[in-house]
Image (cartoon, rainbow, N blue to C red; front, side, top):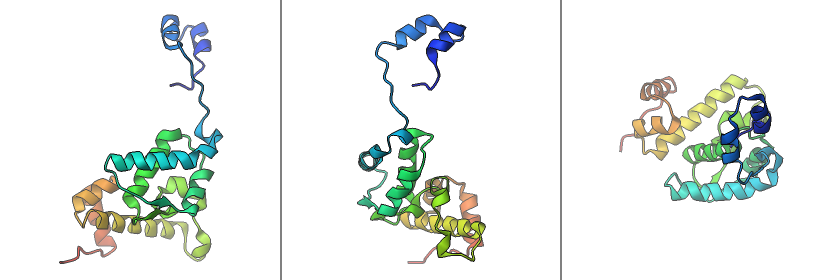
Length: 173
């Protein structure tokens, strides 16, 4: 797959002609995901099933608000980015339906509902989101800090520091 104009590159001598003809047996032109937003709900369903089959989690549904966020995002990374966002949401989801707060901030971005917290700064909303994601990861990993750090894709030391900063204690059974 490429976004480059291979015939032009071939004419300019920067792409090998023989390789172009080997690759150009059946050209498939697929529009970017941002141009086929109607496909997103079906892709979400398919990708969640695929992730569940890989043992990455199981979610019953995607809330209407979360689907709205997915539909409004431009998807520069196309379907691969959508799959990564859904995997992130499975890790950060509280179970049941995926909500927008389970998505990475880069996707939610302009959809963050600051009207709910009008006096809070963007930084404090972000810190609250980070704390909630950390708590969800700890609960999902049954408070195994190594697994929680791996789920969040952060170092164990970073996880420990955040736990200390937010006074999060491992529950005693």
